[in-house]
Amino acid sequence: MLLNDPSLLHEQCYIDGQWVCANSGETIAIANPANHEIIGHVPVMGAAETLTAIDAANKALPAWRALTAKERSSKLRRWFELLIENADDLALLMTTEQGKPLAEAKGEVAYAASFIEWFAEEAKRVYGDTIPGHQADKRLTVIKQPVGVTAAITPWNFPAAMITRKAAPALAAGCTMVVKPAPQTPFTALALAELAHRAGIPAGVFSVVTGDAIAIGNTLCESPIVRKLSFTGSTGVGIKLMAQCAPTLKKMSLELGGNAPFIVFDDADLDAAVDGAMIAKYRNAGQTCVCANRIYVQAGVYDAFIQKFADAVGKLKVGAGTEQGVTTGPLINADAVAKVQRHLDDAVSKGASIVVGGKPHNLGGYFFEPTIMRDVDKSMLVAREETFGPLAPVFKFECVDDVIQQANDTEFGLAAYFYGRDISLVYKVAEALEYGMVGVNTGLISNEVAPFGGIKSSGLGREGSKFGIEEYLEMKYICMSV
Ligand code: ADP
Image (cartoon, rainbow, N blue to C red; front, side, top):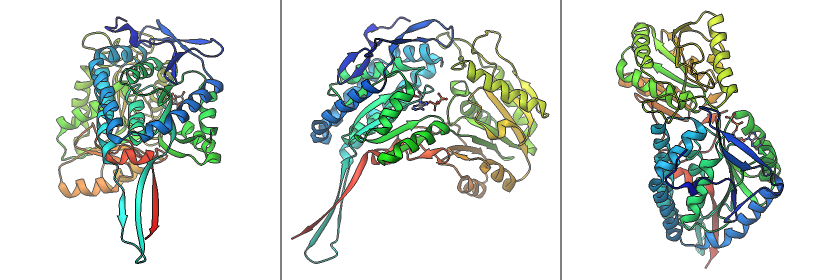
């Protein structure tokens, strides 16, 4: 990996403004999922180092929250600019440790940076309220104050954006933050810390701790100093963290699993629906929590949609993300490949047939062929579980009420998509889908200006948008007698 600026690759953690090793000196190797080559090593830290990071965040808090919003905003703005200036290196680092194609990695760097830019602006717009008094001599006001020391635990599928979507609103609000990145993608997180350092974000305000997920997680959850935890990852781990945070009554934001339906009605623009399905299904090799997991197509266009969809999937190019023209990188690890295979085998054993793909790619390793299955039904695992891979199961449906019932028949409620042109149908379906986000005639809904988040087992809270900063603010009501 040839970075323009090799000093972005750190093999130490960033705590209290210093680059440090684990107390034990222990490190773990990080491998490229495309070719299994070792990229470098990161420290295996545990409870003691996490406590140091929490203490540093606590010490840094008074000065950071005392800055004017404009002062914090300027530092965040500089951090944003540095991400953009170093976008090529960050993207290469990300592709090397995560596998996504370089063009997608560049897209993620821009997306990650957009949260910093957005919240640098929102920092200045944290308004309070004045309330007409309940008695003649009373003056009532509401002010917003930072929550305090916060923590984030993030996943590997968006190694940069899942950190900035949490850290930017936290820092904008005047909070400090300790981040535990995913074990698969620490280098992107550490590069973000390097750029935060260069942007002049003070020591302790933003720290990154790598290592033992359980020891670090326990320490963050149990600490009475940490007032909020923001987590993105699986529902099972989210539930566990919420239970662990209960004794200290932390505020929580949880972005958990999804099982997104993608519905195509008879009157849809089929070419647009195929374009949307390609993005919603195959982006990041199907490894996003808003990926279309169940594709429902109305009977009148079922065959036509599958034909066009198969043509588009046939044009995907599988390979290492650094290779020219590659659209689909490797999956993150062997477990991910095994899950796709399990979902595929289960569906085929119950009567589904394969239209395109259907097996591990002949490149070997963690590469899997982009796959479409037809004649899928609700008895199959793909109807209930998130596949998190390049496998598109296509269900056939007849009537609107039936597809809404099937789409909502899941514990999850993150993203849903549908394509149709009848205006009253569009409203009815958008309102009936039990999801936090609905894409109508589009397969791409995430951006920094809109509230991202789910309902039911998909989590709590919203990230991005004007609402995102509220998650890092406490409301204080002041009642003054005059
Ligand atoms: P995935 O299966 O996609 O890796 P996880 O929910 O397991 O999703 O992981 C998301 C993040 O949660 C990662 O940073 C991981 O290290 C962390 N994590 C996993 N288990 C725990 C745990 N018990 N305590 C704290 N963090 C955890």
